[in-house]
Length: 366
Ligand code: F6R
Image (cartoon, rainbow, N blue to C red; front, top):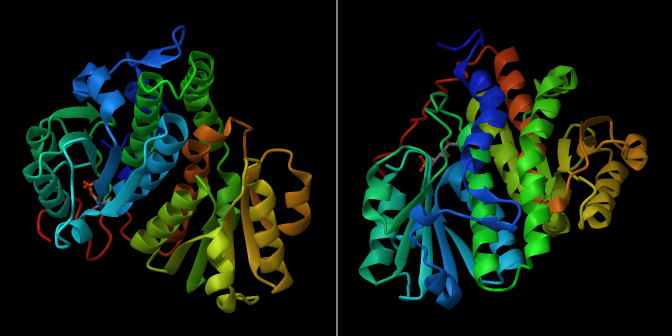
């Protein structure tokens, strides 16, 4: 049942290219540079009229939501907020009928996310479920559903659910952008083409995992690990840190690279591994200067970088190459080595990777 893999988590990591294909299948119209997903229940009229997107989720699904905000704001020019469901539900939140509320959840059964969604519905907002498990509670309570089609995720640490959520959110951003005339067909086509090609790049990154073993060996004794990223790299840094802490039990923190100066820089010394998500995207120069600041304080740098980036070789102790792809689809690649690093560190420690201590796959109580 684990298909020859030692753990479900490793199997699910390697399934990602196939399941991302499943998320995209039948939803992309390349010729038109457009997306078809009527099951979402977001009519062209509502897509035009909506004034705000409000994303609620927990854990890994919340990290996908942060990437979703970047895409929706950039491509569809809709103000977007992303909130932890557990905070929304107790905060007397304010929703409007022209809000599109998106509840992101792998299981579709997370108690806090359900409560946030109910609060939104009670105030007349339109609710879209972005879920993996068919016909679970969240899609049943929503006006429409965009399913990720990742198949059953058994490992407690979420992997393929996350990358399929990313793919679905980028589809949604393109759909909204096209309806709102903020995204020209040509640009829509470029992004969708890049998304269509991403599974083969994912296979390439996953196929060459030797580098990760070396990095995992370096990290296995680390008590603390800092993950940094900027722009779309920020939610990936958060997700990398969450994966590592969940299954390896090391303390890990994900931080926006630009916030380093506002606190975490105090932690940096020769004992602290710093994993930096720094592909050659629009934020590269800024993130690179953060990386230099880490090096100036003797921090040990692991860079997730674009293949052939010579400057990285001079500054990072370890690096993982990612193929050059358009900025928008970068997160679907940069997260993969972080999942593998967490997996191999936990495995070297002999931890129960699929059933980490204290965690449940579906959190149906708050
Ligand atoms: C992380 C993880 C949890 C879930 C969170 C939300 O690896 O598994 O953080 O992401 O409990 O679960 P869903 O997406 O089912 O609502």
